[in-house]
Length: 184
Image (tube, rainbow, N blue to C red; front, top):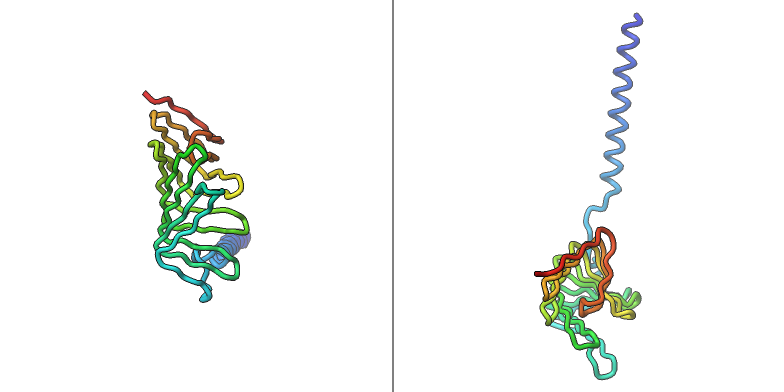
């Protein structure tokens, strides 16, 4: 009798654990987003083919963003760029060119987000590689991002978990596992 009671307790305990596990799995799957959206589903988007926007400081061009297609959400004033090419000029004349799969301009936050995969290089031969998005702040004129490998034209390499830099890629702040390797 006692043996039977112990066997029943174990069976009941296993059944309860399995039911809890199945319930948690269902809850996680239900609450997980089904699709990450880079553009809104709104039918109100205004679309332009082959357009560009730019910002000037007096007569000097600060940045230009061109794209195959631009969609503007009139409600949020966000602009969504397909295959954008960003050109950012530093005061010393250095030009940084960044190409990406998708770009988002948020005028309210004064940011340009370029989503990976990205390619970034200066006209001096410096390159920037990152695993995530790159953010350009229109106020500070600085570029931020996650894990980075920056290679200078003199073969000096800078890497880290996050970065902030100017368009010349010569004033770089790297945080987390920061490493500098001098070129040969």
